[in-house]
Image (tube, rainbow, N blue to C red; front, side, top):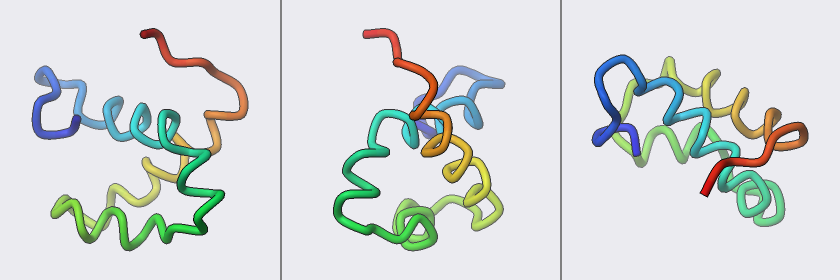
Length: 63
């Protein structure tokens, strides 16, 4: 999602990933820090993933 994002939308794609996979992340108690590390993107994006997971309680992604 991040690597294929249109220019200027990379952070939004990290949010979307967090929204889309929030249930799996929470149910399986995956570490968001490990997800970011395994993805190969900068550790500074951990905050953005966390925001996406929290946003999942309030939004529904478009199909």
